[in-house]
Length: 92
Image 1 (cartoon, rainbow, N blue to C red):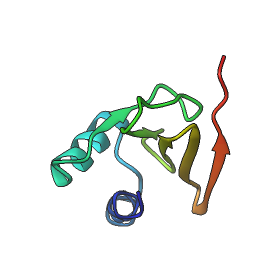
Image 2 (cartoon, one colour; image 1 turned 90 degrees about the vertical axis):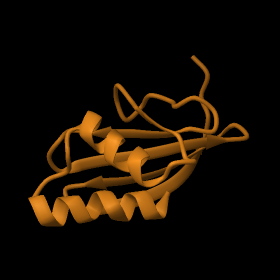
Image 3 (cartoon, rainbow, N blue to C red; image 1 turned 60 degrees about the horizontal axis):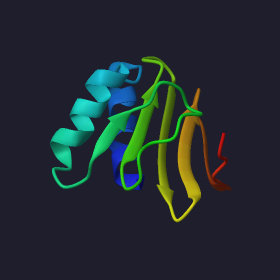
Image 4 (cartoon, rainbow, N blue to C red; image 1 turned 45 degrees about the horizontal axis):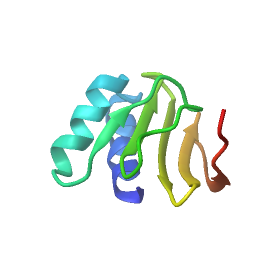
């Protein structure tokens, strides 16, 4: 997830903001043909297994997440503050 995160960050540096989510998903999917991406309704939403979930507010927030073996891995940029981590999957 680091490389797609870096590409999205480059868009922010060049344009001054992250692309809106549909455009961002298209940009990432176009550059990584064998890596599936899907837009998420919110940062809390879970992507399907094996798919990288992408959420952006179209301005200064970006959230990428991936679920592997019941753990959620994520990278988030909120107004220039980058955080990454792992959390256990919660089932509703």
